[in-house]
Image 1: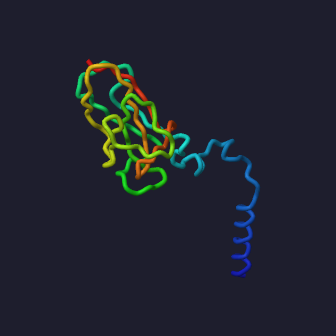
Image 2: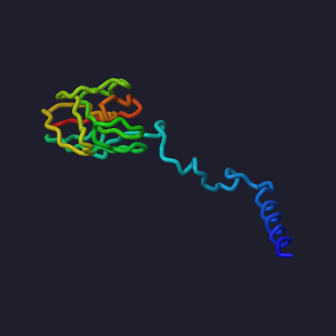
Image 3: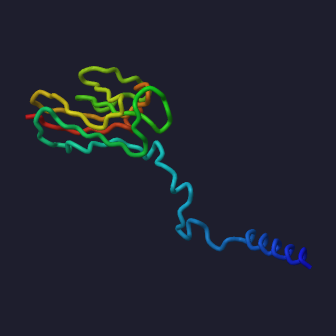
Length: 152
């Protein structure tokens, strides 16, 4: 009698779990694992927290850098979804896959820094953020952002 009862419970459970569902995730708007996944490379971007585009500033110029869809990590190891910031002065972006050299106009933040102060002479500038991997290989124009500022 006990084995008949257990067999019935198991049969009912299998039947209940295997029946067709009346609504899909799309119809019910339930979140799926795919929807909850972290941002993909297509969604990732860098942005300026400060200064604002078109701002008139004085030197030193405080710059705060942001990124979404990727994580900031010090230079060294190449890992998917990680990188660090570079600032390009009077340049829009660095070509995809090319190593960004360190210079007065291509500034590395290989320790994972997200802000800095730039000493700039009076004038008009294009300041660009460029995200790159652990060995400074550029993620290209999709991971770059530019603003224009006037230093007084």
